[in-house]
Structures are given as structure tokens and as C-alpha cells.
Amino acid sequence: MLFGMVYALRNPTEQTDRRTLNLFTNWTPPQGFEFKSHYEFSDGSGGMGTVEVASPEAMYEAVAPYRDTLEFKISPIVEVSVAVPILQKAQGWADSID
Image (cartoon, rainbow, N blue to C red):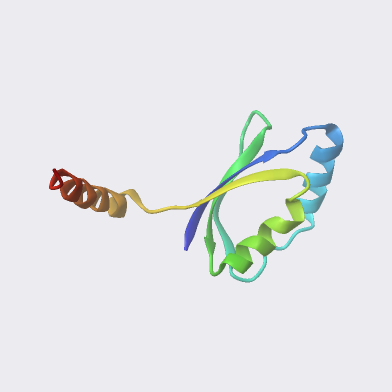
């Protein structure tokens, strides 16, 4: 399943920057967790990625090492070409209700 993930430093200090960078450069993604894309915001406030995850446990294992330094917003995502017809169907149904 695909997820969009945005993360930001909880308490941005030089110490938390160094700690988070050290964790990340020594980290190996768990089995069942794969980055499809991964970007850092150019203002240094955090980053974002698209990840494919096999299970909730794999997602939890991936983000758990960073729980003290990063705040995550993680949401399932759907390709626009798939989402638009679903939205159109839902709107059609809603329009049929008085």
C-alpha cells in the first residue's frame, strides 16, 4: 500500500539535527518498507516521501527510531487517475440524495 509521509523536527536545535542525521545515516529500512521517493525541504524544516508498505507493523518499525526527534503525518495515497473516477461516482451518488 502506498503512503505519503511528511515529517518535521519536533524541537529543531543543532543537537536534534545532528541526532536525527546520525540515526538516518545508520538506519536500514525494515523489510516491507520501501521509499519510492524521498525529499528534504530546502528550508531545513523536514521532508516528505512516498513509501510502499507491506503492513502497519513495517510502517511502525520504520518510524519508531525517530519518534523522539521527528513528528510524522502519514496518509494512504491514491493515484489521481484512480481517485477522480471514485470522486465522480461519490458525487453522483450524493447528488441523487434529496
